[in-house]
Image (cartoon, rainbow over all chains, first blue to last red; front, top):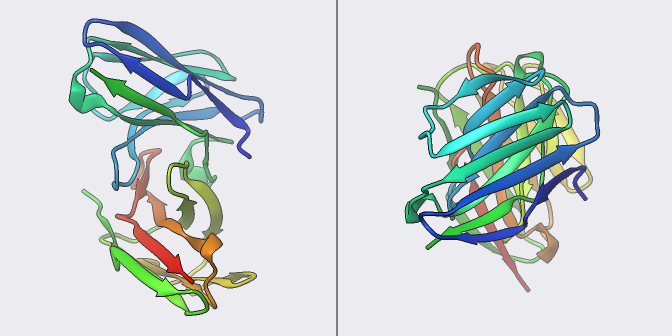
Length: 115
Length: 111
């Protein structure tokens, strides 16, 4: 069982909708991540937050907007998505950013379908 | 950019047979991590290797980090159907706080 909780587990949204994915961890981790995973592919990094500040944006389109309200929460706001954005969105956390050799722990993911 | 390749892409074994997946990075890694993802599931952390030439065992799983810290392997002895899934290696890249995943090896085990 993972200690990183993601909601919702499944989401179907239209291309004009606005929705949000939510992630929560209570392990005291100060680094949080959003990954995107397409079928039969490895996870790809989208964003990294370190101490609630955006540390990395992997050139993600602006229709994806991350937010870190506090050290335990991470949101991903979705607006005007395209069908090709359909994927598994994984939240993860680690004690600190990865340069320290910390491992990251994934949530169960949110399966997103854009119609 | 850094690339992390794994071979084979897919392997189908009969229960009881051994299995090995190999991970190769284009650059030296400070550490390497291994994850298992069951079908329909999320990546689950298995182990981290840090030292050159390090070998770690978890029951039937043996993990090795190469001397040059650019490659790694995972060997499963006497596979079971519970071993089914995709195994990913992953390593941090450069100065960025980024974990780059290998291409993954999908393991299928049948009775």
